[in-house]
Image (cartoon, helix red, strand yellow):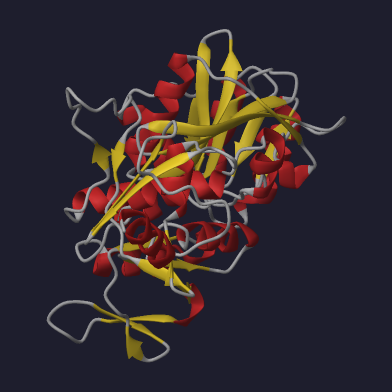
Length: 381
């Protein structure tokens, strides 16, 4: 199968690219800034460096809010032609905090008490009714940028007066005291694949890693996991980060990030998040393309175990040696020094951990499959 990652080339994107290459036969890296969408045809045509984009089985499209129109256009043109973990509408919703909070409300996902102010008069009337402190946000922005705090009515009015010259609506939220902590959960499909608790540095209320926050691994309860997964589905993204506050009312969602940085959470949790994302994309694409990686049927004479898998993969050689995909190595859980029973026939190789059996060939040196067959024939003579 063939995959592509369309991105701005961040470190996280490069990590994911390398991880994808462990699973897919061919993976291309495509610069989002060099993509064009031709609307002069009967259907949208995506061009890369002036040429039509090749066909892919899976495309992971990601980028910052500054490219929202391009991301939405590309996703619209490609979403029926390849497996894509982020829908076209998700780029509009996920990159706009106002639309994100409206979506959360529609799907009854818990969030802090939230208001939208669009003009100074309405805002001042609203701010008179609120208790302090409050959080004020721009609809767009990531990494904690565009998030401000007001400790009193006067400071909130001053902030809003300054922001109103930008002619943007302002999101006002009731401040939830968490001791400067929040949770970031990375969702892939129906699972939270990694989660960390972020702690803001002294004197800072934003816990974002880019704002100096520190992360540590955290085990989420079922309710928090379910809320994170439900949030991802609500915005239309099967891969994203969900930021959550722990409150006396339970978990509250504060933000969704469609292109989360992986460095901080990988370092904090020691989980290879890029690999988990790549594996999810591979398994999803395999299933939807009809070459699914599925549990093997149990057989009365063969003890397959609960984690047995049937893997469909192309045969790869390295200097006349057959190379098995890394996923086979991971699933087998075999160790160096294990004694193996290798049964070789035409178009078939069966490998299993076993005690010594009569008629087997013991291989202690590195040998090719051809050498094994030769030794078997020699024993028969």
